[in-house]
Length: 124
Ligand code: AMP
Image 1 (cartoon, rainbow, N blue to C red):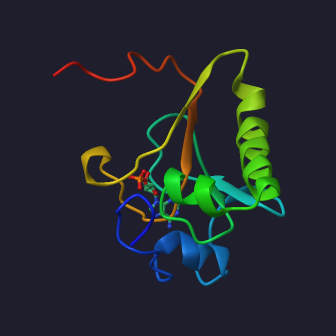
Image 2 (spheres, protein in one colour):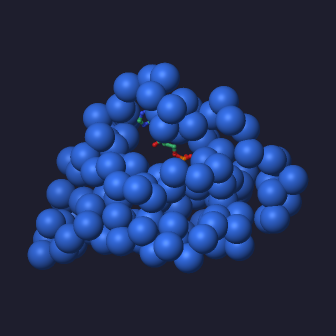
């Protein structure tokens, strides 16, 4: 069980396999602590995923268990991806668990940009 009550980390999840180089990705940034790559099914002109390199299911897991340097390195990578989009504006989003529709059980942040993004969520 992860600290948040989600199932334990599955080392066969698709992002774990990308990190191990078993399946390809279109990488845009690869640092000691994070990998950023294009989403395979982009929802906006820019749709990039940023993942930490450790085995974390959720934000709770990651922030409870990862070394401070890994946490800082991850968020610096997110900021580096967002920086070129900042003038036009962009959004970061992370899905955790079933109500959020998390498909891949490896903590990740989506970076959306390149067009007006509309309201944060639809009401109801
Ligand atoms: P989430 O619903 O937050 O777990 O989002 C998972 C995201 O991973 C979705 O936007 C998928 O399109 C994306 N995705 C799934 N498989 C791949 C892959 N092999 N390469 C890049 N993105 C992927």
